[in-house]
Length: 124
Image (tube, rainbow, N blue to C red; front, side, top):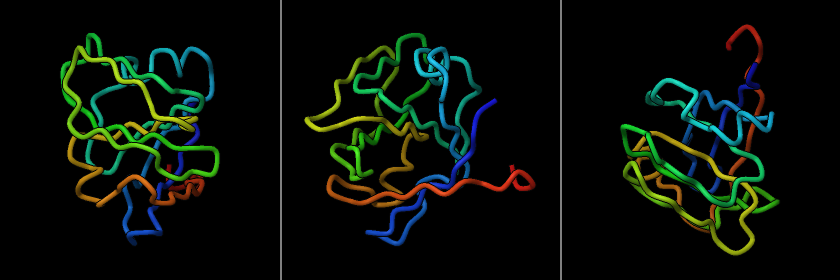
């Protein structure tokens, strides 16, 4: 069962994801979005420890937001097509996967600070 968090970007005053799953098991991190239905607007998947992302076998593009230990954005990849592999950036420690266009819509850029707040069980 995934933990759900709300992802905010206080630097820009935006919300990249209202409901973001946190991949906590090794299986969830290895398979990422391959195990989940297509992300809808407002959704995301946080992959702790992910410094490389592989979209092999995915049927749609996604945005990637790489974060350092303090949740500062180190790199943003917009509209990554299926069948690609991306390596994070220096200092990157995890990756936030978003529907294509969500990073741009929230104006999330390298250097921004993100924050994560648990979604209460009643709102999950």
